[in-house]
Image (cartoon, rainbow, N blue to C red; front, top):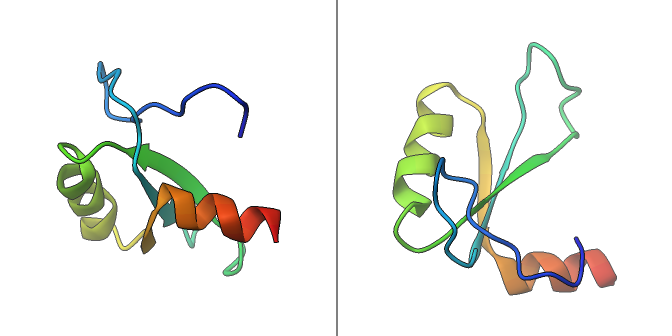
Length: 72
């Protein structure tokens, strides 16, 4: 992550991200690998459902908590 304010990963959205959606595609990634999408409040559910239907979603965490864990 950079010093810039993270923005939502939803197409066309420029809102500040407040959630991290951790996911992986088991056909492509090793089980421990986590890719991330960022989500604002408005798009969290939509993006979670998109990943969940495909069996990719592993965790949804507040951005601050994710950042704190990365720094630890």
